[in-house]
Image 1 (cartoon, rainbow, N blue to C red):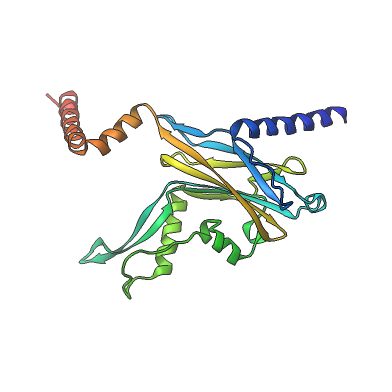
Image 2 (image 1 turned 135 degrees about the vertical axis):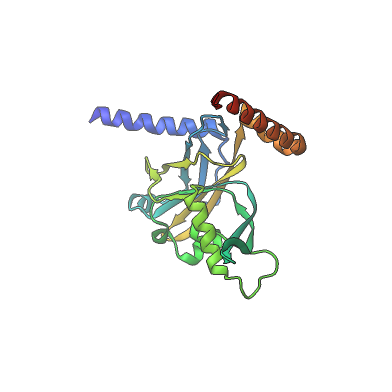
Length: 267
């Protein structure tokens, strides 16, 4: 029993130390209302040639909480990582004279390029769908707002479903119903899985606190994802000097083909 108490104390101390080192704690809320303090295990993730994805750990604590409600599990925490936002176009193909071609498309404005989520419970058990939609929590509740003119042939529901399906199939949108757990009465730990194809740029960690189904507080932190090494050089060359990059790619393909023909030609 003494060993278990010592191990529990060590876990709590490490979590508090990680939270203090990762981010500067927020000032205490003097209003007496529940709040959140969060910190991440790292503020920057480097993408290298052998990057196969990574786990991001978020530490946090519930401040000014009700001890009884905590004990009976009436507090819920949802943590989400949103990638850089950008307009995203979804295209639908139809057969034209026996050939599949892009016929219609729809662009959704300012959508996260990636989205990972973890929560203490299933979202439907934490809050009402209307509340989740208002806050934009969960893949099914993200605001998919189309841009431009919508013709009668455009089916908004179908395009929204296609957008979610493509993102989830590609591993860029994912969720975990048991990714957040309380390790002490007020301290929690969340783990988010970052896909191997996570885009670079400034991502944002969101943490939401709910009490008996009501939204209480939110905190957010930035997380930088950067490319390093050869990948960074290639990416910068493609964006900064597209003509030179294209000519070099064509030249490299020609040289590779010529060398291959010399190696495998039959005398």
